[in-house]
Image 1 (cartoon, rainbow, N blue to C red):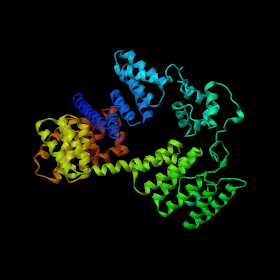
Image 2 (cartoon, rainbow, N blue to C red):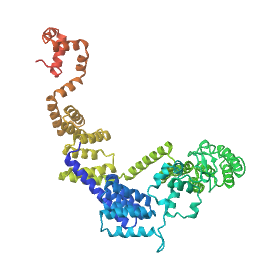
Image 3 (cartoon, rainbow, N blue to C red):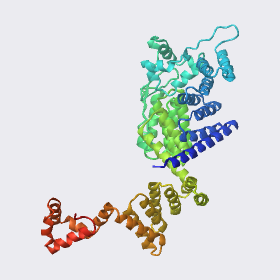
Image 4 (cartoon, helix red, strand yellow):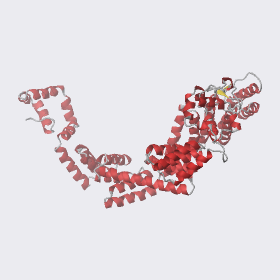
Length: 572
């Protein structure tokens, strides 16, 4: 456990780091670098996850970048962390305004003014939001049914729209309608009728409502759902990427496309990739709504090692899938294949990005595992990139200066950085152990000593530090053993000799230490394991007079004398 003083200093150092990150984020935001600002605010939030100001600032950065949904989420977190802070509601109003959700924005700005009645900016933005709710001068307010506050709740409760909510582009559809309810292109979507029915609580013309596609169905029409059964794997092996993706159709272009695809699969299995590409291209020409022909084609490029072409084809598959409302699982698999290609290119950041996109469409254990693996690879890469023995030496020297001044917490800070830069230098661990020892943090010091000795078993100072730590922890036996080891390597070391004497004296005053040391002696172990001696020792506890009889036996007397000498037993 850290002492209160050390904990306070470390907390203060962390607070300063958060403040530095926040200030850097503010400067980046002022300079218009929203991405950098978000990154800095996020780093600060990792250190201070309940900081309402950081959520507010990141919300502003997201809003400036046009990412209003993210801005809204951060504004909500800000309000949750500090519900009596007006700026949190102001940020929420800005995000809602950016999403064209003007009625909700008005409510958010009103909440701001309830807390800060003289907030001029909130008054102006509230007036602007109210103006958006009206048409030309003298006209009545335009009511947008998709702007109801409990919209998502209603859609989740309705059985039909609950199924629609599983489609990745459905939320996008509804958000578009919230912005522009009269969008003619969107109004042609058959899902709009089901959405209106759920919002109004009525059952509108069931025959005209869309049937949500099942997991293995994909739309073959932009204006309706003509199920085409198919499946697909993210793997780029022949069995998993080509042969398993089998749309079924009875006649027409889709049937011919299926035949071409089957020919492509056969060629793929034989690794005749050029022939396979020709058949997949022909299949897509015959049925340009089926993205599995594209993902099969991408699998060929993957096997050929043409990862850029694989990525390009998968991106096209996603676009085609979006246009034709393909099943979200197929979109997920296209994204996963892009991630696989980037992984082969050793572009870990892009691979992680597309794996995350894949699980946002459809979460599978395989993709979650890949995300975890890529994150580990990224962390290791960053760790290796951070290594710099020269900078480590600079930090170690700075730590030494603070150690000489007696400022041990500041010295530890520099030793921490030095270890990050060069984790294989035993001397840095030894120096940090010395700081912890000065602060009476003996367990932390002992941990550093063990690491120091592990890195260099012949480093004498590591054993000297360990001996001092063990004495601080009142482990006199451990201290003696550490100093013994140091003396083995350097018999003339005064610190080791003096430490050894102190440890032996402490051990002699500690009955438990004496007992442990004696039990480690092979001769004592043999005596104590002798069944006859165990019986004699038990008799001595219940009948002290029995000792006189046993002492008449020279062999038993010698063993008892040995136990008395080492302190295992005592005669009162």
